[in-house]
Amino acid sequence: MNIDKINIVKNSKPIKIWDLSILIFVVTVSVVAFFLLFNQKGAVVQLWIDGKYISDYNLNHTQSIELDVHLGHMCFSISDGKVFVVHADCDDQICVRMGEIDKVNQTIVCSPNNVILRIVGESDLDF
Ligand SMILES: [Zn+2]
Image (cartoon, rainbow, N blue to C red; front, side, top):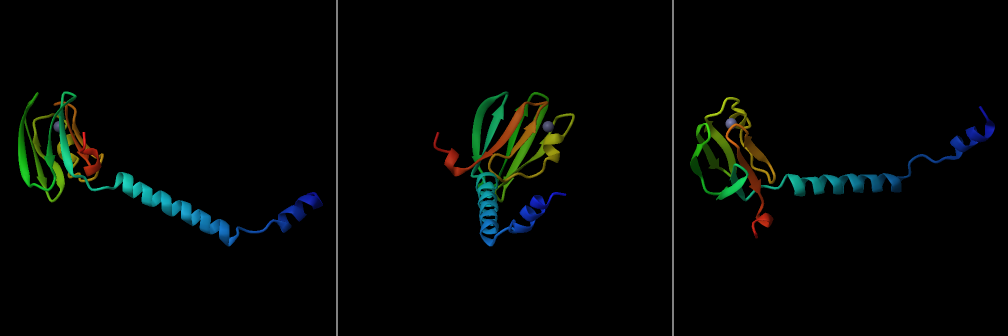
C-alpha cells in the first residue's frame, strides 16, 4: 500500500460531534415530518362508490352505515375515531379483514363492490 494513502487515512478525522448533531437533527426532522404527514388522526371518512364521491361521515360520531352495493349489502361502523367494515357481501372479504383505520390517507377498499373508504384530515375539509 502506498504511504500517502496510509497518511491520508491516519490524518482523516473521525466523525465530528457537529456532523453527528446534523445527522441527528435531519433524522429527527424526518421522523416528525413523517408523523405529521402520515400519522395524523383523521377527522372524517369519505365514502366513494364506483369512483364517485358519495358522502362523508364525522369520525367523532359513533354510527353504523348500511349500503346497498353491487354484490348485495355492506355495513361499516365508526366509533372512537376509527372506521371499519363490519360486513360486506364480497368474495375476498379483504375489506373486512383490513380492520380499523383512523389515520389521514388510510383507506379501506372493497374492489368487488368498488367501494372506497378514505380518511381525510381537518385541513382537507375546506373544499
Ligand atoms: Zn369487500
